[in-house]
Image (cartoon, rainbow over all chains, first blue to last red; front, top):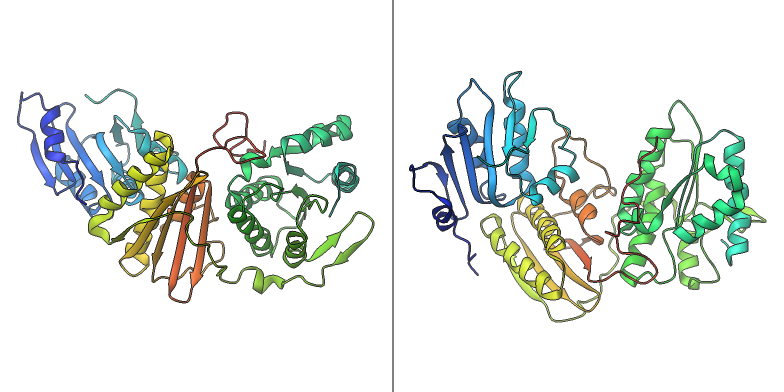
Length: 132
Length: 319
């Protein structure tokens, strides 16, 4: 049984067409794009043990060293513990004073972060500011 | 061991008062009805006692040891003595729940084998429970009291056996099953199958989401730690939707599913998460590998409110 969900179609449906987003990573269930406002990256699709390795490398590839890292997770339909662990690790790798800001947190990710006790980490910030 | 409410109060009230008189923190985890009874009997002394509703804390019995651990860590220390009362077994628990409650009672010996000077009283209602349940209570507890006498249980299975790998048989599924073999590459298919079955069984959308999350983590454990692959079956009846994951691995720590992971600790968190999100989790070591069964109730089981009922206590904080 193949998943009916196609991240490419999902993205196409959300795009405004104003500018072509740059693809950093893609597989059959996940696509990662560079965003310009705010400067950062967007995950769309599903993250699990098959592709969570791409989270850290995408963040490293898609963001510069000089500012907070903005990660739009509003189009993530699923993210397992290993994917969130990658986000946590990426946040911990940031130099002092910088933060990893998660935008548009789906409730499923909030559940994982709360249950495994990662909601107290100071470098990982859940932004209430919307997804833009 | 008690028979009826008067007997219950006769055994528990002196135990609570003894703790209060000695300046020991006391936590009582009982049904709302028994808490009300105890409060009335204790009068003003009840203000010095911590109470928590077992229907919330112990709906899934694997959440009880972490709650006691929190109590001991937060209220104890420096040799301070503590007391607790916990009654996770009541008439009306399903057979799957009962066996996991009994496993919990045994694992309490393992969880608090060293170091912590505290005294836990586990009331068993001999008037309401089957004789086999009382027999098992004698095997899982080193000491037994009936209020009048306090003696060593001569059938106690001992500390080593209390934490031994659990291989109690699992009953065959109660209805027809759907199955899938999985590895890292098709976990997305596992999630689809689970979501579809759980939603058709009537689980609410937020509980479908929790169930998918838990099943995905247990299947991921099979992929990462249990031989790289596994097999999954899912079925439902009027009471619950149940998912079973089997792999060729082995659980080698008896408390593997009920140790709260420190935020910074490496290592898997799937079993912990499953116990927080599912109504019942059964883990087994069989000769050929492991089995994990995750249960989500479709309605509140008899004798208690639903676990997501706002009136129940899902977690305890001790001030």
